[in-house]
Length: 228
Ligand code: DHB
Ligand code: MG
Figure 1: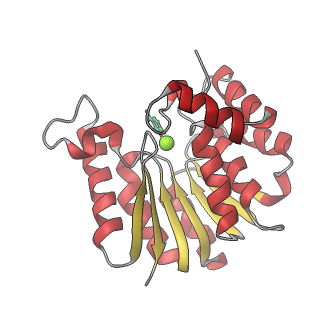
Figure 2: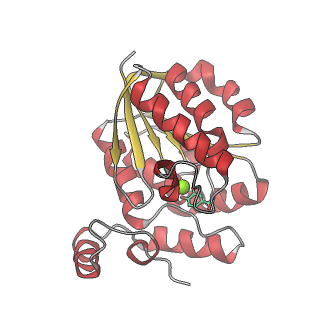
């Protein structure tokens, strides 16, 4: 098993030389993140954390928007959460939501090792139920969605209602492994998941509540700024 994004998750033009060059120059993964990726897999979590460059995108985008209050739906082992925390303004807080206690335990260790235990709140259970508990602390600057794909439309609805105007929603896997664009051919993916990702993209692009784009990572990182 490899743990690196260019091998697991495509970079740019799919050119291996270009990917090696970008990795050597921009160094998207340091020892802290590499340890989190490897420990997560060794603890039995599925190897579906964001790729190295996806993680760096998360940090840099978060930093660029000067976010202070962020929400993540889908914690897994804490890799993407650490990236977001690195980008937050000093004193900023991340609320991260995870269905499974086993994953949350791994993530808490990740946040501890990365030095963020005092700035992260890990909420365990079904996100749509648990999100209600933080609504009074909003509106939020950033919502990153990377959980069960069937839930994406509802998570986006929550983001539309709980981001400030000017706040940003990001959605991983918005390409649905390519199947969002392939009509009745679901390419072996779960049709319910692909239909939900289509609805997510359509709502993000056309609802009028966001000005949105698609960052063409291998998996598709959809991004919208709340306009109303
Ligand atoms: C899967 C989920 C993800 O969020 C991801 O980035 C890659 C794969 C999955 O469920 O297989
Ligand atoms: Mg993902």
